[in-house]
Each structure stands twice: as C-alpha cells, then as structure tokens.
Image (tube, one colour):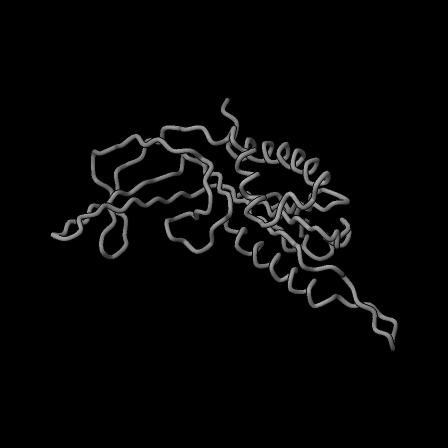
Length: 227
C-alpha cells in the first residue's frame, strides 16, 4: 500500500528540523537571512526531490485565462514534488517558501503564442493538494516586554508586536495548504512553549498546521487546538 504524500513530507521535515536544531544551537549566526535557512532546508530535504513522471491531460490556456483540455491527448511530464517559491497556480500571490506537491493532482498547460516578432510558449501549472513551508527569522527584536515605571506593569514591546503581525500574516497564507509548517527562528529566545501556544495556537488549523520554533535555547513545535 502506497504511503500518503503528506506522511512522507512531515516525517522528513521532523528529521531535518532535528539536524538544523543541532547545527543552529552550536552556531546561531550561521543564518544571516531567512534565505540561508530556506536554502539549508531545501538541501536537507533533498531525498524528496527525486524526479517523478506525471501523466496529465494536455491543456491550453485561452485569452480569457480558462484552461481547455485537448481531447484524446495525454502527455507524460517529469518533475519533482519539491519546489521553491511557487503557489497552487503560476503567478499566484500566496506562495510558500518551499512547496511539496502531491503530483497526482498536478496539471500542466503549454500555450503557444505566435507572432512575427516574438513567437513564445508559456508553461503554466496547477495542483489541488500539497504542503507548504514558510520561514521567519527574527534578528531585530531584543526584548519581549517593557515595564511601566509608574504602574510596574509589563506590556509587549513594539518590536515584538511587529514580529507577531508577521507571524500571523504567514499563518494566514499557509492556511490554503493541506499541510503546512511555519518555522520561526528566533535569535533572541523571546518565547517559551506556553508563550507561543497562548499567542498562536488558536490561529493554527488542528491536524493540518504546525509551527516550529528554534532559538539558541530551545527547539519544539506546537499545533492547533481543537475548537
């Protein structure tokens, strides 16, 4: 019996996260930008990047943007399930940094455009199921709370509020995926597990979304809670 594409993806990410955790906590400034992390993740997920043949009907795209299938025409196209920076359709705004596609749902369209000056062909794609990974790297926020000198009460710093807005924005984009992971790498160790669950667990869809947290002090994940 063939294992589901999502089980393979999630188990592979767990192993990769363990490796990155060890390396990062030995040298946190190995990552100077989020793209260092994305590149490292993609490299370590290399076992998922093998070529597979996809049998798909041949489609063209009309001027109205609609897909039209050519009858009695099936092409076999080779691609990998692992890609960088793509969404469910070409030029779609809500992209994940790393996408893992269920190739059984993949469709391609190759549309030829003829002209005297510039004959071209445009390749497009769409798929209905897949998993996405997005990465956030916090280098800027140094303190999580500030103390009011008059009342003695603590409140979140402006920097932490901005970081949490970025987290919520990424989570909103990831909700469209069947399975999704947000990796928050925090050089300043601002969160404990309880803090992270209090701030974000209600924004995660149960069973489909995980949020991994990596800091010089800790590394763990939280998932959505059932309503």
